[in-house]
Amino acid sequence: MIKELDQDFSSLNEYIDDIKPSKIFILVDENTHEFCLPTLLPNLETEAHFEIIEIEAGEENKNIGTATQLWEILSEMEADRKSLLINLGGGVITDLGGFVASTYKRGFKFINLPTTLLSMCDASIGGKTGIDHQYLKNIIGTFALPERIFFYPKFLETLKFEELRSGFAEMLKHGLIADVAHWNELSSLEKITPESVSPYINRSMEIKNEVVSQDFKEENIRKNLNFGHTIGHAVESLFMKKGNLIPHGEAVALGMICETHLAFLCGLIDVEVSSDIITKIQRLFPYIDISEFKNGAITDLMYNDKKNDGGNINFSLINGVGSCLFDQRVNVEQIILTLDFYKNLHQNQ
Image 1 (tube, rainbow, N blue to C red):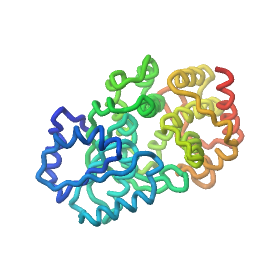
Image 2: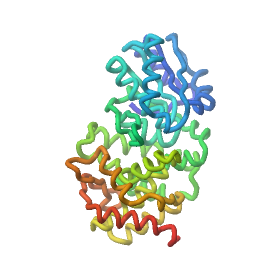
Image 3: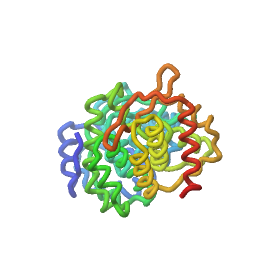
């Protein structure tokens, strides 16, 4: 299902030749149209008719309006259930493209060609598709697996450093929840570069795929992949509401710092483990000033998290490096203590 592409993209061409799609649609944004499509097209060998569909780049375009436009374009271009959608892009493209493909005519085939570190190691894997609505992240979506995921590490060379670092946060998360060696190797890197992270991409993809294969519909162990995201998504949503987007990975890094401290408050890890993890994340990621947001505004958004049930706020919290527990109910007082801890971190640096 997951395959690294060689120079001539032969495995992609073999797959397309095997399924013989009626039409091919390639979904890109402005960035992947400019930097990645020129690599894909010369290597695409198919007799099937194909169309390029371009949307504007950015998380703010992952919404119902863009999805509606894409449904209308597919209809105008007479897409049918034997068509193939190739999502060439980062998490916005794979989330949005997968959602549109899984709902148009009750679903047609799509594959992901992730072009960012975030989408390679996280967004393109696992069959979660979705869009944002009313400033809530991925609140509308489907579970729909791509037919294949093809990744090409050289696409990382097209990224800005901030985008590369954003994806690196998810790799760190994979180590923290499931693989102590992976965490130790990644957290020891001196610099985040395409060359330094490439040797570890495959392991991160494996970790996510192993978890998803055990629990596709997120009823138990898959919830562990949300470590760092309960608080991270809430903060990300508040910045989105303000019209001041922050990179997803930076929000997750903030979330992992907070939720590591929360794990300490809950007695799941000791202070030495907590401090070591937080120090290593701080070295790699910038501090995000959330002092303008009241704690109540952040906790209110957490109640909308998809993992919650019965009005409780559920967390996935580590109980050691490389180990995680899901469905950990935490009281609001502990969450507020954690948010105050984070707000005071900057003063202590």
